[in-house]
Length: 224
Image (cartoon, rainbow, N blue to C red; front, side, top):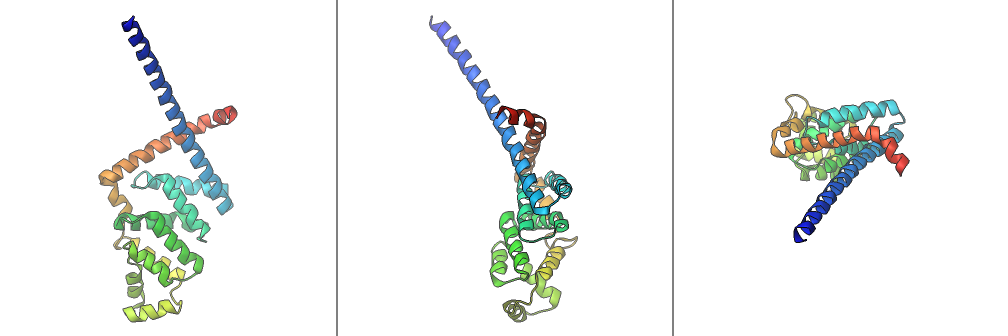
């Protein structure tokens, strides 16, 4: 009797484990499917074009596959930049460049993107944003000084007068991340690290779940 009871318990535990695994798998697929669907819809509203949105997401996902950044985080960054006023055609390029800066400095991508977004929204660089970037190890001020041949004092005065435009900050970002720049290929350089490989694996699993969800989404919606 004891043996029979143990066997029944073992069977129940196995069935419970299988059921729990199926539930977790379904939850994973549903979460990632609704996440990309929600991001796509938000970006479509912000850009006003489904075609542009699909193109942006495809490019961002391809970039995420070879960097330590997850596609979902990169898309969130792209949405944030658009909300701050960047042009649609700039979004992918700026996102990639900010990712290079984050990869090279080890700083949080979201924080760097917010600071650059605030510069864009204000139309000029101010001390607040410059300090946010300096705290994250981003040498934007030094690059701007080199661009204009200014001393530290001259740069501070120009900053106080609001003479450093958002366009100048964007040019400095390009110079910092183009070939030979201080932060060039900063994102891809992190892809060979343990963290980079783990992040790439997580991104691949996330994309896998989303691809399954494309086919199962109509069924899920029907059930719900």
